[in-house]
Amino acid sequence: MNITIKTGDFRQEETDVVVIGMLENPDFYSGHLHLADEALGGRIRELIELGDFKGKMKDTSLLYTRGAMKTARVLLVGLGAYHELTVEKVRQGAGHAAKHVRDIGLKTATFLIPDEVPDAGNMVQAAAEAILLSLYQFNQHKTVQEDDDEKALESITFLAESEPSQPTVERAVHRGQTIAEGTILARDLSNQPANHLTPTQLAEKAEAVAADNGLRCEVFDKATLEEKGFRTLLAVAQGSVEEPRFIILEYTPEGEGQDTVVLVGKGITFDTGGISLKPGKGMHEMKHDMSGAAAVLGAMKAVGQLKPDLHVIGVIAATENMPSGTAIKPGDVVTSYGGKTIEILNTDAEGRLVLADALGWTAQYNPQGVVDLATLTGAVITCLGHIAAGAMGTDLALMDKVKAAAEKTHERVWELPLWDDYDEGIKSKVADVQNIGDGTAGTIAGGAFLKKFVEDYPWVHLDIAGTAWGMKGSTYIPEGASGYGVRLLVQLVEDW
Ligand code: BES
Ligand code: MN
Ligand code: ZN
Image 1: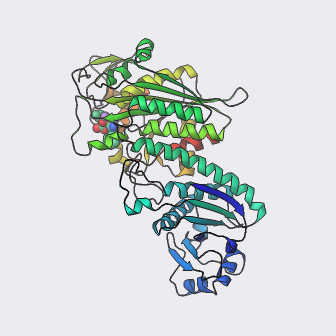
Image 2: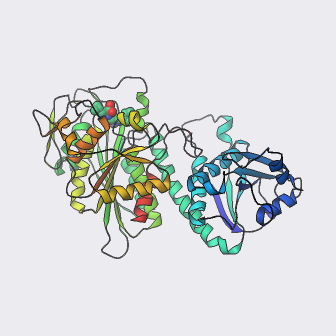
Image 3: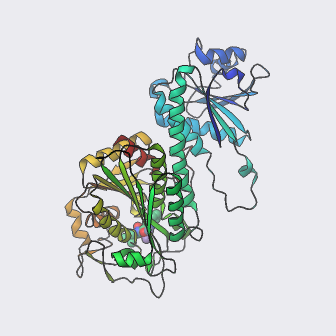
């Protein structure tokens, strides 16, 4: 995608379409709307007066300029009432417009950024993000493209109305693009079938991302994991012919003394359930079971570009979860990296096992904050649907930061309690802890389990099993992998 940012008169734009956002009850007496309406002989005003276009969210109207402007088309897109305008509405409107333009087969589009946009930095960033995210498609495995797949916008221009706005627009578009690219990386990884993304391939991808974005990367192979005592990760991996990988990415800012934040991702490249085999229906969706890892990698890519003043480390525990003659069995007891013993009552509760080692490893960084993202429990879908991630944690201040970032990015979280009362449910008769809980509050049981392996650092766990894929009703999030978490993590790190 070719992206241009400039200042100019939209009537002189050589482009397939000029897209103009419209509020309800617009003011026609000044600015770009006056100019557009005048050039079109009053036809925008007519549309509104006849009630054919009201400017409500997702209303669109395509007008043909018939030589009155250099562009042949103007697309009006509704953004709702001025007093109800939010960053998320701009995302929804921009995403809707971009898809509309793509779907009618246009190749180039200019998005007009009027001078009077309120909160311009955030609004324009949101628009740029949503435009790029709404155009996302995953068809790299199709050898025959369907008609719709061939429609693609080739270049987008963000047109500032006047010169003084241009620096704000430039910065906002750049940020939006960087964050969208991180999200797209996460979607691509999550959508990748498990035979095209093994733990080894995920680690190779991480190395490539690190090399391209100024990050340090270290990968532990099976022999190294044995040497270092990642016994729970190895236990989950022992049923597969694919070797596990533990991936560490590090962004170090210039100067010294900054806080350290660690982002931890569950990287199960395929979850069959193991010996506690999952039912066949829908099992293919478990190729997405590394979405936490994908979000961490996508966020680290963006962090490498945006260079915040914070020490940021990403760690990913990657393995398949397979049934076989060498696989772990229900009842097995394994020892975690930190030394606690775990009775594995169900081999399908594997995410928390690999995270136990990752959370233990993380302690050595003495971090001021640790956020893990994991497609951990089906129960979180029952609880929150595909709308919000379940958030649990041990630190009020960190939780508040996560909630604030979630609010800004509309990657929603909802806090569930992690009171000690829930610890009762994960007690084991034979080991320090068991891995399935007591059959109630499944998402919290997952959180309570992880808490046992969290050491002396502030920690928040995000159960993203509902939000990593299958989200509906958004113009800029497709139904497959959503890339959930990348925008939230980048916001968290930048606002730290
Ligand atoms: N990856 C799954 C969780 C999941 C389920 C994600 C459905 C998305 C959709 C996880 O490894 C798992 O299998 N969890 C079990 C835990 C149970 C055995 C305690 C679950 O949720 O059923
Ligand atoms: Mn599982
Ligand atoms: Zn899983």
